[in-house]
Amino acid sequence: MTFATELAAARAAQAAWVRLPLNERLTPVRVLRDLLVRRADDLIAAAHADIGRTPTEVLGTELLPSASALKFIEQEAVRVLAPRRVPGRLRPTWLMGSRDVVHRRPWGVVGVIGTWNYPIFLNVGPIAQALVAGNAVLWKPSENAPRTADVTHDLFRAAGFPADLLQKLPATREAGPQLAEANVDYVVFTGSDGVGRKLAARLGERLVPSTLELSGCDAMFVLADANVEMAARAAWFGLTLN
Image (tube, rainbow, N blue to C red; front, top):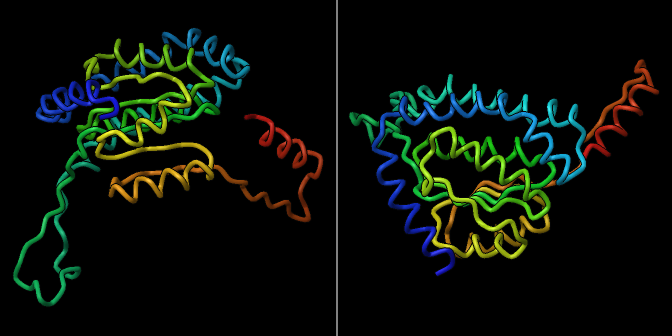
């Protein structure tokens, strides 16, 4: 079995982690948000070394959004993960008289295949969400951002998340397909639509659910009264940022 050792350790850690009250699972998130500030220079240096992003860009497109995403989890996790009563008006006639409650349950072990273009923000968010929801995570960082992955993983560890609960797999191109073949319960992938199609087909064969955030071209509308020069500069910035 692919990554069998890591999976066994993750499942054992998840079994203990999910028994903790939600407020205790949120405590490392608060610490992690603080560490993003304290270790900002390390993250900026790593992202610059990996993908050439300037300090200003790392701050604006990575660190501030990551801190915001963590704050959202802190504020909203209790509400989002709470049991929800199904209103009677949504209950079909043949279930009249019954009472229904939707409970949020963790999947178990979530495989996260990360991306390089936002190596902090688009990895920190999905990993933190999965962990707070009670899952363990096997994380395969992009082979194009190994330094950033090392620092990011160190921050999760320093924040207090158990070592086996979040495991960083090799940042290699081969590790992605290997993780997709592993006995995980859910897969989160951020990357190209070409790879995403292949991944979706394979996961579908195995009935493994997934969330796929795939590449594409965003539409840009320039209205008749727009500042054309500013619009052109904005388009160029957006196209070349990554």
